[in-house]
Every structure is written in C-alpha cells, then in structure tokens.
Image 1 (tube, one colour):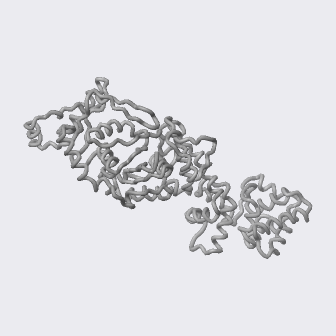
Image 2 (spheres, one colour):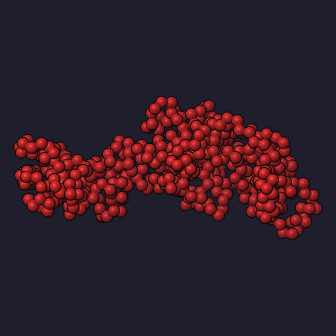
Length: 485
C-alpha cells in the first residue's frame, strides 16, 4: 500500500453515530494515515423518510470529537463532490439508463405483494428468497399495458446466471457466492431514488476509493456490488469486512450491553482517546501485550492483516478500565472542566465560577480523580464536600469517635486548624504529622477519628485533600456537630 490509498466513511444520517460505525470510521482513518492516503466522508441520505440534517451533524460532531478527521468530503469539499447522495441523483439516473440500454437492467412492474409471494414460494421450496425475473423479458406491448394500468416501476439489475461471484476479502480470504442465489435486485426505486447497493458502487468508483473497510453485515451485499462493477465497467476496490461487535453474552450488541452511541459516552464523561483506544481493540489485535496506545502508535502499528474474523466482544468493564487510565493521566484542569456540568446537574454548584472557585473544584477533582471510571461518577464521590450535616455511615464509624483519646485529639486538631494561616494539601500533611508526634499516638488513632468527625465515613479521599477543601470555618462547624469541640 502507498499514498494512493483512498478510503471512505459513508454513514446514513438516520440516528447518532454508533459504536460499530465509529469503529469502521476509525479503521478507515488509521489505514489512510498509516499509508499517507486520503480519508473521505460522504453522506448516504437516500432514506428520505429517516435521514435528517440533525443526525448528520451528530455524526460529524462525534467524528470530530473522536479526533477522526478527513481530507475530502462533506464540510471539506473536493473534486469528487457533491458528497451527499441526494445531490448526485442525476449521476445514478444516467448510469441506470445506461445499464437498461446495454441489457444489464430492466423495468419491473411487480407489486410488493407479488414480490413477497415469490419470496415465500422460494422459502417453501427450501431456496434462498429472491426475485426470479418475472419482468426480465417483457415485450414492449406488455410494458405499455402494465404502465397503462398505472403500475409503479422500479429498475432491477439482471444478475448473470450460473456464475460464481468471488469476494476477495483482506480479512476473510475468498468468499464465494452463487449468482443464482442472488436474484435480480432493485437498483432504482419507484420514486427514482437509487438503492444502497447501486449508489455505493457509483460513489466508490467515481470517488476513486481503493479500499472499502466496513462491518461484516455488509458482506452479503458485496456480490451484488461486484456484478454492478463488472456491468458498469468500473474498477473494483479491495474489500475488508471486519467482525461483528457482540455483547458480553455473545449476542448482538444492543442497549442492554451499554450505550450504543458515541454521543452517550461523551455525555457520561468518557474521554475521546479512551474510546478510540477501546474501539481499535474491537477486532484488531496488536503484536504484543500492549493495550494502551496513543493515536500516533496506532497509526504506526495498524494493519488489516491483524484484524480478526471472529466477533469482537464489547466489554464495558474494559472500556471503564481504559477510560479510568486516561482520566488519571489527564491534567486536573481538564477533568474539572468536564466535571462541572455534572456537579451543576446534581445541584452541588450554581452560578458563575470564578478562578478561586475553579481552583477549589479542581482540588475536589484531584481528591477523587483516581476513583473515576468516567467523569459522571464524580457525583457519587463528592457529597461529603457539599453537605455539612455529617451523618455516620455505620455503627463502626460512630464507634471510632468513642475512644478515650478522642477529646484530646479533636481539641488539638481544632487548635491547629484555627491557627493555620492557610490550609493547603502540603500544610495539612504537616499538621497531621505534627499531631501524631505531639500526641504520641499512631496515625490510625489520629487520622481515622478526624476523617469520621469531618465526613461520617471510614473511607474516602485523602484527609490532606478533605481538610483544605472544607476550609477552616466548615471544619469548625462539623467538629462542633460531631464531637462537640
């Protein structure tokens, strides 16, 4: 492969960008970047009822968020446009007419009921359901009669008989289909809109696509596309059909296995680099044991010969592990920016956030950052900072404050906090260390009672974060409430 590689991602704007589509886009992007080629993004919007500009925007925004850019296509322009199928209808119409004139296609007047009856008959005979060519050889007189009856017509492609159609696939090897099992298929619907198989062939050929990397669910479409390439005398691209994505229970991926759209993960506070890292491992395996990759490392290592035939399993626990890694590696400022909307939604913060408040929130984030699998979880960990009514989480926590040493520990702690010029994590560490030294008590006899007195909990963020976040006044309020000092 070289810089002549041209790949494409061609979503239908009928909903948000889903996990499977995002993986296809990523694999195409990596292939283009690995070999210095071009990535094209175009929109397949011939499903007029379901397609929307809103979905188109969602998909393009999700690609941009993931860091998947493109060199040509929608929003970018290029010499092979337009890049929406509904803006290319004349191209498809002319090609369909050419196929009819050359004897490769014909008008079909069968009703939906007639086509369905034929399909049922095939299945009853144990055959693949298909159209058997009822309108293949209509005379001019028969066509005129059917049109005079007001019958709607479609254009069907005349599939060659008794041939093997071989898909040469970079992932699956040679996959053989019998042409007799395909049946004459529709290439232009009665409203003049091309079908997927026809439009995609024209678009890929006219846009110079060299490699078609897509999901395994498209493999059954490929023989139809190959016979169209041949009839149209167009250059065939190289195909690579990547594995299905299954849920952890090995059934088809669905919402019960976790969110299926990229937008949903973005809205939960997942990081784009984590999603990319996770997606690439759904069907592609690196040479070694490495699981965390930068984009540059992926570009250097990605190849189709390490893409598996077997289904990939969507494991949300693994995604959370990868995302947690990236959260821990991220600057606290970044995670704080991401956390603010969740803290607002939970009612923890309101109004404008000035620099002082941001720094305070950043300290809260730092205190729980390593516990987060995704940023939305922050609200599960920070209530102790916002609710000054301390409730003991258990009898065990309450018993911590019954020890004989507690009055002395708390009085001394209160004095040091009151006298401190400023409470910082480093300063707090010094205060805690001096307490154990002066009181001649082990750390557990000092740190645990202070933690429980301030939070009502025996576990949680480090004390040297809790104390500066709460600040002097709120600490004194809490001590008065829980231990009466």
